[in-house]
Image 1 (tube, rainbow, N blue to C red):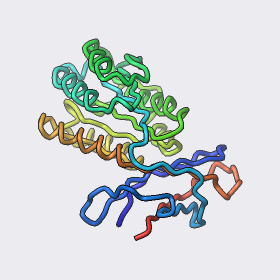
Image 2 (cartoon, one colour):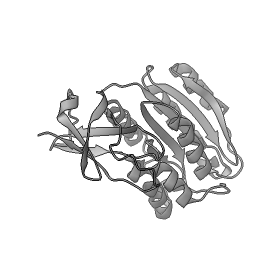
Image 3 (cartoon, rainbow, N blue to C red):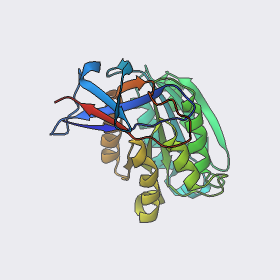
Image 4 (cartoon, helix red, strand yellow):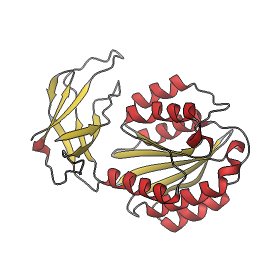
Length: 258
């Protein structure tokens, strides 16, 4: 049995959250595990699990949509893809929709109404540059204030233009958060290898993935996989036994019996 985790440690806090996705040898999700089936180690030392929640834990989701000028040719497909994804998000999960070009702005805030989510997409129109790194940092900050499972889904071609932060800044911010980042490649992000690599560089360390297809059928399958993955995560929490606050990174390992 194997487990994929997106563990992080935030300095100056006394509580660490870990999302864990558990699969068997055939890649199938393992459900119905209990707290006693898990062990958490920080820098090799076991940590007592003080919080545990199993599958179907409500999700705090932010969807960020690239509406820069470079997305103009892909905009019809982009809107369709975003609507399809938002329509598939379970109503129990709170969703915030952000648009971004030179700036970042909210279209909906923490709504559980699928119809409201989908309707807001019609207001999107392409113009301006691409503050991709800025929107990831802003969304990560927004999610960082929440307790529970958190995910950021970004629809973009992956090319940043005009952000106030660098790629290295974004990586450090993601490392210091417990947000899982997924990117849905659109436009040139599907065909250009260097853009795909940038998106993978951001998503993989968080426990997320990058989806690179413009096939409608394959995109729907990707959405189903993503939402299925999110609904099967376990949420674990612990208080570190090491009281030091020295700005150093710590290695977190999750082990599952069997």
